[in-house]
Length: 354
Image (cartoon, rainbow, N blue to C red; front, side, top):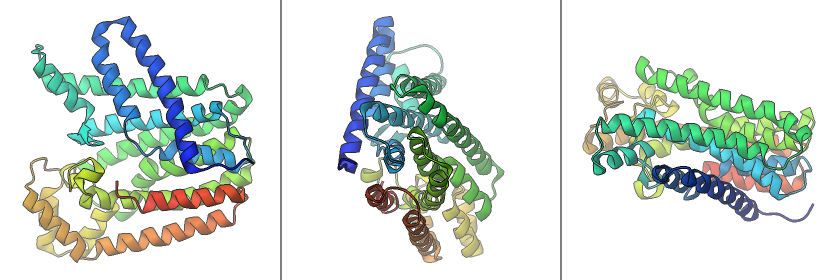
């Protein structure tokens, strides 16, 4: 196998996305001049920022199964990024988030666009409508990019069941996440299950299996990638939980403590509620989901989470899960050269600051 690197894979994926998005936006802009604001916004959202974890894991799954790198594989793997963009746009709307990737979230952009343009009607409804449509458009584009990738139909037929299952699991996890926030209860088992569906499986396990299936991998490697991906996916989500409370805004692109304002019932929150005292529990419960919670309360909650040992517990779990994932990978039939790159990706997923 020719030598490859994470940087070269990312460049291939970025090029595939840029070419596809350019063609799609130019076509829409020719359809009607009033489409230009939405095509510009979605193109910037897709192309400017993003870690490309999912398409990179997919590409590594393909290479780890003995596949030969090519532009068509980069295009097929890049389709997963468009699924991710759909999830982010809709997630921001459901959570009422103001920012993403150091810029306004899509629904906030078009609320402002409505007001600035002096359109009639409700600006919030307009922003929400545009966000729903652009999220749907990105999901539709993911299908198109995959089908137009150039990958032969027999290869696609191997990978499509995983592609569809990944999207189904994502939507199921999203709904359960919304439901958990309104039920007003925290439970470690349910928090872990939701995190696995909403993030862990769709961020790592399914992309790896998708790529491996494109290469015609046997069931042994598919199972090996599941053992690696599930453990790493859980660690990935735990890091996300910590960043959602303690992340630096200039790094994460979102306000510090945003998960508190959004009422996220994460495993970190469940651990905190289990470990803290009654008055601390009351503070956390009345603050979860409060969009206008003061920064002083956010700071107090951050102190509670740290002091009660929940942060230490999460860090311990991340370390254990990382070790488990790497041990599972070491025993797998994945090609050795790709194992090294997957370990580098595992470190990036669990040691990140955004």
